[in-house]
Length: 281
Image (cartoon, rainbow, N blue to C red; front, top):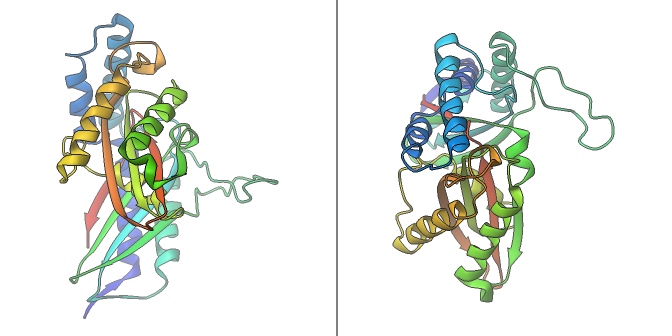
């Protein structure tokens, strides 16, 4: 049994929060550069160029890519042969978030009561934490700060089995059309299909963590990803919502088995500053 002290987890979470807020993911940056070859709108090209320039400045000057430094999503894939010692996992993660948002000069956006008081917690905690057990003796730590604009246009729906692929497609297109400029396009769209009401949202968010140049391993879903991307880019929303051909950089789909009477679907947007970072302990 491999032992890992929780202070190591705190340190890694602190590092990843800062890294992800300062450095745009390489796959997203590359896709933005390539999109300049596709975008025909002058204002659309200008918007994309500004997004790229912003990312370059943020990296070189060690500044946040976006003023909305998000609520921190943390995914832990914990090997079954690992034992954490020295404290609680949740407390260790939140301590890392707390330190990073102070030392990295990141905007703190989390409020304690969601409906009434809405008082800022002052340190961007608590994080949204997901744990998954996997074989082995290592721990994969993934951090994804998620801004409010992209979260607000995200949707969970419970379709019926008879809706099938056509219902999935029409739902994603409807949600993308209604989102307009709000999620800061060009976006990456994560789609979760299957599972349950509470788990399908996680699938959609997990889809955003996949490299946007990689398609779903199932050819049927891969074809659906490609088809959806084409139709979303035909909506004409464009970069910054100002019109053009590049509304989305990718559509990523993740699936999970579900009840025979259900067809859950979730659509989660990643803005043009789609941020995540990971490390293995």
